[in-house]
Length: 381
Image 1 (cartoon, rainbow, N blue to C red):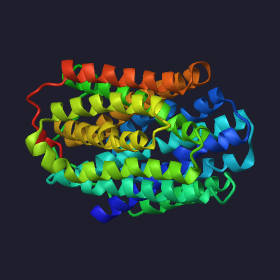
Image 2: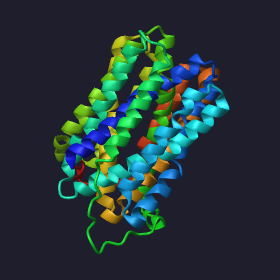
Image 3: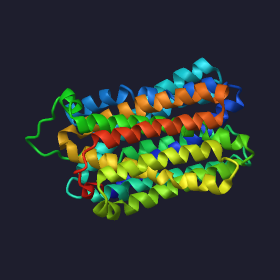
């Protein structure tokens, strides 16, 4: 099942690599304001607030993860057609809302599916998940070069084709047999655990900190005179760092606790966003800032997945992933994107990315205060 899961991650994140860095440039090209771009780009996070909880409840209640992934992938493919039919803000708003409502179903369910298949070998998670990073690299780099010679609209067709690939890959997935006799606790019981509350809260602020990056990073660099191919290379560099982190995490976690890994991730995120905001003209510092993506996303994601895998039993995994997605990527991503949109035109890039650093600093404080120091790093594999 490993190669099938790896293939799914490849296609899923290949779509994100084609869509996320460049769709804002397309929206800018059709005359939308920064505020409206931020609204459209934050719809994914908005739909992650509640939709994953609905999908995970359906999946956990009937063991239908794969069927939901397939159905939602098909619906996402169909709804993406809206971008070919209209350039009106309201029309795009409706189409993107439907897309993200269904698209948000897939990742938490496949993450739970992956952890279920790897129950006896959690250390293999990173080696499967890294293929998502490879997919992202292929498309963010390829589309960057493509847009230097082709119209910005060509990005839409690439994204549509990658959604089709995700659907076809989902058709190859298989359900995992859950251990008998395990009863999933009510979600409110999970929320009452201090370590869970603080971990998810920190995840919210980390994702919010990335809001400015995901919405305005490409626009920021292009405005400074960087070519789209170089923008693609810088995005790629960050994901290459992420891949190395996934590969090295088993060794790192043997020597460093989960808490120490998380503290380092947030501290480096604070530095990263300050550099992006204030050192954009110095290519060496931009390169260094992108290498820090390995910490601000890669190591943070691996450590959080390890914690969820350790703190939740098999029958709770889909809801645990959905809860993390709703709080961190939903509330955090939405808030971060909207904050960036509000600051971008009124205060400029430097202040916008400084605000991102401040959000990461809050997450650092939450980890320091709430995640216990005796959480063994050996789980982060």
